[in-house]
Every structure is written in C-alpha cells, then in structure tokens.
Length: 379
Image (cartoon, rainbow, N blue to C red; front, top):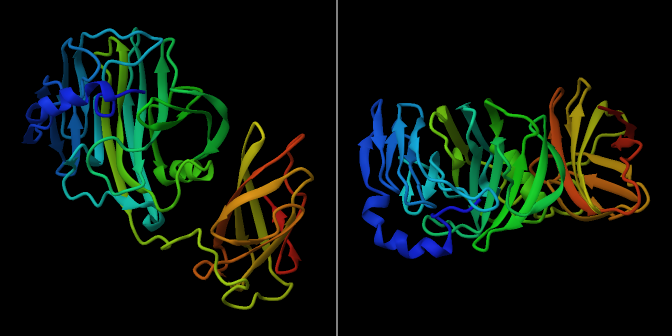
C-alpha cells in the first residue's frame, strides 16, 4: 500500500522534514519511545526501526525494544477503500538514505545466494490493519527515493482492506499457499502475496518470493535488493500490535548471471543411461500463464557429472523464458541441460531450474522425465 516514503504527494514534506524523519537517537534500549512522524533508531546494532506516520497528522507513537517494536498509540483513521495511515516497521538494508548498520545491501539479485528472514508478530482484535513485509527492489543500487518494485507479503489482515491492484492467481511459496495480487500505486509496481489465514511467526526464504516475482517478468536478475522490512499498515486503531522479534540476512556468492545460457552442451559429458533420479515439478498457474520450478535429485550412489533432462510439455504450453538451465525447444519435446556451475549433482543432492510460459485449455504437468536417458520417479 502507499507510503509517505514513496508517495508523490508527500515528497515535498519529506524534503522539509529531513532532520526529523531520520533523526537517529543511537542504539535503542528497551522502552525507547518514538512519536516523531518519521523518527527512527537502531536496534541490535543491525536493524532500523521507523515510525513512518506518513498518511495522517494524528499522533502515532511506537515503543522500541531490543528486538522489535510495538504500537503504543495510533490515533489516525484511514478510509478502508483507500490507503493506510502509516507503516511502522523494522528493516535491514537502505531506505531513503537511512541504512541499517553494516548492511551489505543494495545487492544485485544475481549475486544473492540466500536471503532469509524470521518474524514473530503480536496481533490485536478490534483494529483494521495488515501485518506485512515490504521487500524493495530497483534496477539500480538505489539508497534514496522510490524503488521501482515492491513485494508485499501479507501475514495477516483484519477489516475490509485489500492490496493494491487485482488478483492474478495463486502461488505456493515456502510450503504455504498465497493469493497473488498485482498492480501499481502510481509511484511503483507492487506484487502482493496474501496468506489465507494469519501467520504469527515464520522463518522463510525471502529469495523465494523475489524469484517468483522475477519469474512473473516483473524484475530481472540484474535488479538490486535494497531492503527487507516488516511491520504494520494500520487503517483504524492498532495499539498493541507488535513485532516481538525480527531478523534478516542476505548472503552473496550466487551465480554471476544465472540467466546467461552456457555453451550448447554441458561442461562435462553426461553420464550414461544409469542415473537414479527423482524430479519435483512445482508450478504457479494463473490465467493463461504459468511458471515451473524443476528440482532434479540424485537418488543414486554415484555423482552425476553433467545432466540432460528430457520431458514433453502437454499440448498448448509454450516456454517463453528460463533460468538456471539451457533449454532446447519451447513446446512439445524439451531438453534441459546444466549450466557451467550446476552440472555436478552429488548423491543425495539436487539441482534446480525453472521456466515461465503460456498455455491454452486446461493445464497439466509433463507425464514423465528422463535424466541422461534414465526415467526418473516424480515427487
């Protein structure tokens, strides 16, 4: 939803309130109170907590602890058919020049090997709000101003409120089901994932959501992750809402460019038709489009040195883009071969790749898979 930190109508206010917005009081101790409109402080020597009361002139105060924050008072009232009044949050990364201590963000998506976060929320009744993550990305390593892509993950919503845009389908990410919304607030694009029931605590891969947005064509691997944020968007009330614990970490060392095709053949000649394998074929399907994430597991006792996975797409399906493998064919018979960096699969290990496509008629999965000439079991 809208933020003063990214709404065009308040950029002038931000410019006039720079000192107040990012007046940092030093590392927060327990029971540190922030009532300034854009007041912020650091916690744990690693994260920033911000009040971010952007949509109302009414008072909002947050109580900052050593591991999170709680909303102490929230006196603004927003229209449930419009925007919330604020987004008090804790974050890792850079946001309007206010970077968390020692952060390695912004980091290019292609360089990220893992991005994880853990959250514990405390909810209240009788208020209208969402409890949501904000994940921000931009084509440049931007530390100031509005980023071009926002990912929201709605852990909970109370009252007659909804994300920006409209429903475009459903997805299974991190072992959970999500309703997917897509739209724009006029300043940036938004993809939102809405949980069907409240999630009060979870440790998960942020990179899984980033990859899903990439698979939908909204960003590319050359974009930059700038921050990971978790907080609340209150419309009415909200006192007592709290993030009791938060952590986030982003690690580099990922492939330099996982979407760059290698040579037309694997780096190492594939082993013969004696591979023992299991294929997991996970899909996200919407309207006339889909993404597929394919995991090839080595269930044998010998390493697989170079691989070709053959399968046949059902009639009406066409691949439009792919990642982490070199694909031959776009419909019908498909061969996926390894890239230079993922050709070796040790016993008990796996390799993954994916693709995006279109379909007509009813959607179905391929009926069988063969790795280096050997038929695989399917999970």
